[in-house]
Length: 174
Picture 1 (tube, helix red, strand yellow):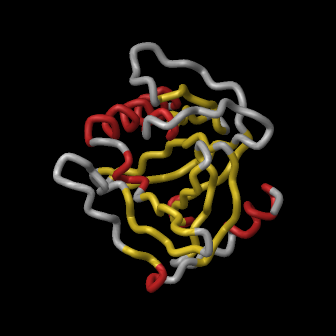
Picture 2 (cartoon, rainbow, N blue to C red):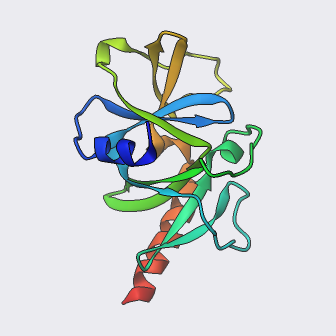
C-alpha cells in the first residue's frame, strides 16, 4: 500500500481504525483519531538542551512542531532514515490543551480495522516496568501488534516540555 493510499484511507475515520507502522523491526499501531497527517521525513532543526528522544522541530505550514524519535524513547536500535521514513503528525490532549507533535517511524504499513474484541489488555510485567503507554495488544496472524496510547508514551514532564515548545511557537506567531 502506498503512502498516498494510506493517507486517503485515514480520511475515513472509524473508531476502531488504527495506523500500523514499523519501528526498529516491531509493528506498532496508533488509533487514527489521534493522527492529523503523515509527511515524509525531511530536515529537522535540532533543539539545544532537550532530551535525546526529541529529534528536533519541523516547520509545518508556519507552525513549529516538535518531533519525537520513538526508537530513542523506547531504547530501540535506530535503523536510520531512508525514503520510507515518515513523520506521523499527531494531536494529543494534555490538561485541556491540544498538543501537536510528530513521531518518527521507519515506515508506515497500513490502516487496519481492529475490533475491541481482538484487543488484549497490556500485559502486567511487574511493578518496576511501566506498560501504561500500551493501550492494548491486537491479535494478528503473526502474533501481536502493540497499540500505543500516544498520550502516555511521554511522562508528564516530557509532555510539558513538548507542550512548551508547541505553545512557544504559537505565541511567537501572534
